[in-house]
Length: 412
Length: 63
Image (cartoon, rainbow over all chains, first blue to last red; front, side, top):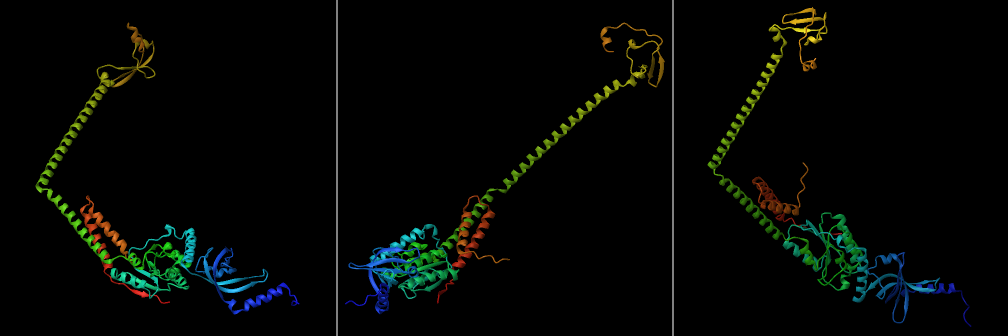
């Protein structure tokens, strides 16, 4: 007869204990294809891994998902490592993932395109974020492996064309899981602690896509983007294109190309500056010569004659002006004299004293007004007669009137 | 007197080019020409001084 029945939770509890104490299931690594991938708002990622015959539920906690080295996507084949975990309530088990590895060109390029699309949408590749690479840097930093071919090439190129710029070599791992972290850390460290660095070259020599993968990881892309110092990305050979190339301020096909791009050739500059100096000397001399010629053109005696004739012309003009002035003043004076004489004569003619000197007198009525017509006089009127040397009061004894025409009458 | 900031190489080069342009103008007066020439030569000296100081230092950052 069957063993005594147990409750569901007891059974699940027992299975859980077995699964979670098994050493193999505590740290297992499994290969499979991703399907029904779901990114949860909390940052947790749920998907299942399948092969042609079977399926396994997977759970990738958010803190692991954050520093995952690959963008996950549907249909990608991955190798996930972690431990088996029984979810008692649901009665199902799942793989709780610690890390994921992606291998094979196909899968890597899926991850590459996924990240490229994601960062592209965020605008990390936009042109307006690209900074100018300084033309004449004082100091450049090179973030690459200390022992690789890249640093050797870069140093060789720079040294033989420019003995002025300082170089800071910042050694980092350039492949393997820890590489991306070191590269990102190097770039932000230089930004924070080396303000005298004008340009950063980050890169490495050639290699397979797996070996270059660090330069396709998100944290490297973000640290390049956030760098205030212009970054030249130089990864692998001409054909290798990485996410760093898209986000950097300039892409160099190879480390050698990066070195050439980053520093100017001093010999060329010396020649250019020298040539500038010659040009200066030539043009100042030609300018002086042309001024001298201008001066020579001015024959002095001709110049003197010209001046003298100018002077005589000016003198004549002045004399003319002076004469004119005198004439004009004289005519004014004459005009005034005439005017004055006229006034004088009219005054004299109107002077009553002159008439009196000839024996005539002025007859005034009692109000002191001149009497000019006998017609206004009556008998016994009181009058005053004014002579040249005195006056006399008189009264009218008799009025004798002459005959006269009517117009005189109107003037009374 | 505040230390006059040493002009960068690019600034000195640009000024040198400007002086040479100025000198090429037809109607430049003698005084302007001489002044532009003097300035040009001064900038030339700064440039060539920079270009000839082999001060290169190569250092490796150690964590």
